[in-house]
Image (tube, rainbow, N blue to C red):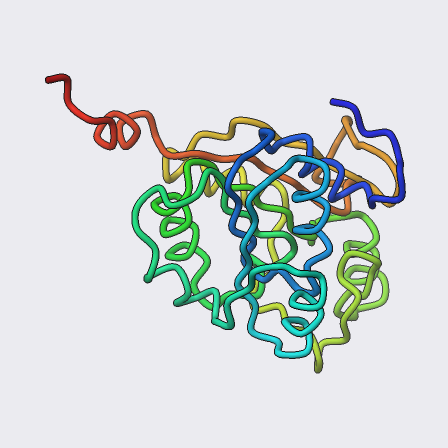
Length: 212
């Protein structure tokens, strides 16, 4: 995986490496469109976003990006099965009310799902909880308790367990610190976990057209 720096932040560089050239991509909670712009430019991706913040949508439109105003919790219901090659949650999954339902909807709408989220079990967060007795504020969890957009706080191990319980396939996973890839003790040392997941083999088989 070539992750040389060229002005693109490491988290987005990792996601770029997971996406095939020329793919169709739906970015859920796309923000100001930074990731979509990079995907379109460097991977020739056909990108579309869903975003609820109107100011962020204006920024996307100014960049010439296609964005739909909507809530991630309900925004996928209008899409047919396998409408996109990839569905991306870049720091947005922890902000939905029902992540289990949204992940399953994403796997219906997309062939693959990329999930990037802040690791709540990072050592800096553990330190603040254990020694300071306070809700952690870290570079990957930068919000105070009273203004955070996050509904759910999960760790890398939590997400891996979730995939195992629901028989979802983890095709790839990358863990990053502030400026580097973390390969040892990621649940303790990584600030962000990035996963490429897909349906169970049984669901894949059901989705395939029958032989004539």
